[in-house]
Amino acid sequence: MKLNRLLIVCLSAGCMSACESPPDQVGSPSLPGQSNYQRNPSTDGSPEAQRPVAYVNGRPVPASAFYQQLIEAAGGVTLREWTLDVMIERGLDRDGLTLGVDDFAKERRYFMQTILPDGDVDTPEGADQAERVLEKVLVRRGLTAARFEAMLKRYAGLRKLVEGQIEVTDAAVAQAYAFEFGEKSEARIIVVDSLAMARRIRDQATGDASFIDLALQHSTDPSRTQGGYIGELSAADPTLPATIRKALVSLDAGDISAPLPIEGGFAILSIDKKKQAEDVVIDDVKDRLVDQVRRALERQQMQTLAASLLDDARLDILDPALRRSWEAQQAGLQTLTP
Image 1 (tube, helix red, strand yellow):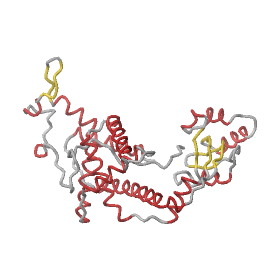
Image 2 (image 1 turned 90 degrees about the vertical axis):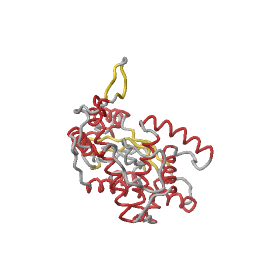
Image 3 (image 1 turned 180 degrees about the vertical axis):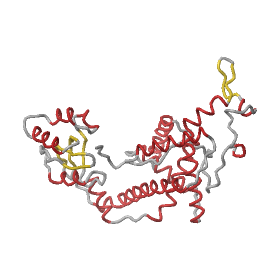
Image 4 (image 1 turned 90 degrees about the horizontal axis):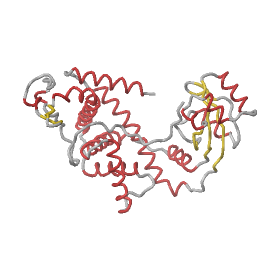
């Protein structure tokens, strides 16, 4: 079992081209060469297919030499992003919504806050720092400025479609407050497949055996390489299994839990240290927490909507290489789905 944290979820940073700067309103996307789409330039002798895209030792490399490999390597991802953009535009048109400058500015600010969580991107110094970090992020992800703007446009469209469905409750704000400022437990974990194995390991851990050594020897969790260390946990973290959250409430420093049923096996927790709740009044941070909860809910809804839009799209893939790439990409997504 891999214990997840509250993460900022990026829906996708795929290979989509877009305008160099975001438009005031979403327009209809166009596919380069759409009128000739059924022709495969890797197999015809047209001038377009023979156009050099590079030279190697003075020898021209025709576009056709790359078409097949490029389509199979990135075609599925590109088609997925293009399809999602088309479906987002259809949804905006259906709901009578448009995207303006403010929507793009907000999306860019959100992204800057993501890559610079400890900085204030609204100050000149913070904004400059965020821009420098952004340049490095784009290089690391292989994104051009145009593709980054296309990604922001996609986020803005999805957010526009879901923002009217978001309701921030007092309970959600209280949970966010407890997660950020409440008691934390610095913990280690051992995950095994069977209850019998978990009981044997727990007996050894409460005896003379080292929990760290037992984690290295037996745990199936990725944390085994760190002796089971998983950092600070909060009982208010909704991403943790309910059995883990309940155990965190009752365990003190030095305690080892009984075997806890989780998805795919059984876990044993060892508490290294307890960190007391911070002395912060909720009313002093409520506005920030409300915004934080709203954005988290928006991200969840945006992910759900994106998946639904892709499911609703009707695709007629004519190119065999693109079809193979699409099918491989879809199989990869299914493999990664928990």
